[in-house]
Amino acid sequence: MLLLESSFSLFIGRFHPVIVHLPIGFLLLGALMEFFNSKVRSKNMDAAILFSFRLGALSAFLAAFMGWLLAGEGGYNESHLFWHKWLGITVGLVALAAMFIKGGVLAIPDFIYKILLFGMVSMLMITGHLGGNMTHGASYLTEYLPFGNSEQIVEKKAFNNPDSVFVYQDIIQPMLEKRCFECHNEDKSNGGLQMHTTELLAKGGDGGPVLVSGKAIDSELFRRITKDPTSKKFMPTGGKIHLGYEEVKLIGWWIDEGGDFDKAISDVDIPKDIKQILEENWKVSLVKKSFVETANVTPVATEIMTGLTDIGFTGSPLASGNNFLDIRYNKLGETPSNADLQKLLGAKEQITWLNLANKNITDEMLMTIGQLSNLTRLQIQQNPISDKGITSLEGLTNLETLNLYGTDITDAALASIEKLPNLKKLFLWQTKVTTEGAEGLKNKLPKLVIVMGTSVAEKS
Image 1 (cartoon, rainbow, N blue to C red):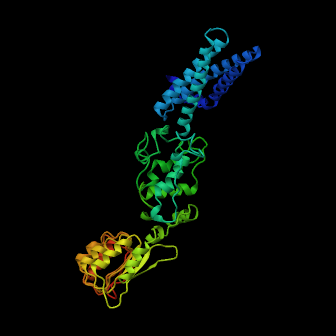
Image 2: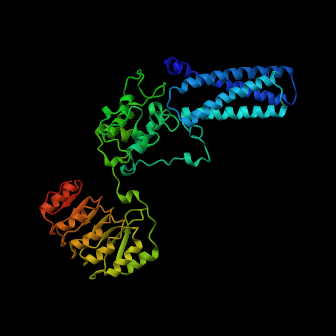
Image 3: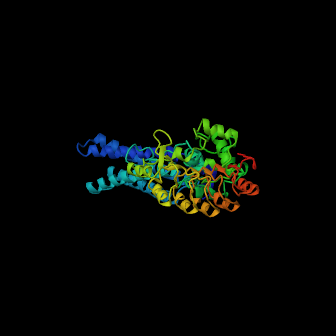
């Protein structure tokens, strides 16, 4: 027990990966020679096979002993370690039996001898595979399989919109996976730390949590990757390629921002130096794109567009190759009915700009307009609209511009407007909304531009 607990035992144990290749080579060679020798018997070949089995058995027990010592280091998957350990010992015993049989010490039928050799080779391969899994992870063997392994195919996320790029999932995790997961995965947990899931990373290791939200300098993870590379506590260990300066900066920034696993880049503060790293080296666009720049819809059906044209609507695409539509009512001297507006629902996916200014739009009609979920610009100024009607627009989560100039809304409508998460510009000139109400909305949505003529500063 003293030997198993000493640092010297770990020194000896770490020769296991070196020695373990000897029984693999000797025993496989002996089995192959026996296969070829069974057809044309040769005394010289028999002697070579016996010699190979002797060396294989000796090195198998030596490797097993060193592996037993190495297991005292801990941090391995218990199930895999159990089978790797005992299969390794069994390989040594079977190799010893093969040596005695080949040397004439034991006499058994030839077919049983062949089964024994087949079992030895099979156990040798399984034992080696388990050892590889514990050292490199369960996916090590199939990670770069060129075909047929759909579970290993990871869809690359386009980094052209900050809303679609997640700080941990797309920036931090790939770095940790490349540099740290080899020793902190489902099969190996050095220091009791596993990092292959966010739950286990948040839980930490034997010494407790390795992340302190908002404080990189107090987080054990950050401390380990910023220590002197000659220190025993520096990570990653064992001469592996360590994290680069920019990678360390990004990990520190992520922890300082709270170490959240679910936030998009658009949801966190990005200092100038981090912004430069992300844009120049990670090729992440930090300019938020509008809904119509990132979404795709099918073209509107010809019969639907024809029907809308017949009742006074005109439509045009926003841009060449873009199926989103700019719709307005242009029938001279007339206003649309609620039944007319209902027909817009046939193109609800394609309509993103809608202009119904001064068309006698009522609160009831807004219930239909509120179903056009892809609207990004809505112009309904100079219409008899009240606070009640504005509640119908609460589901327009993609709306970026809303013109309510010249309507009858009051401060009560602002509670509904507050629920529009992507609203960028709001026109409230000549409404009953007070300056105080507009300023209160501005405080809740600081990025919103509110236009009230000269009564409120149009701050962005």
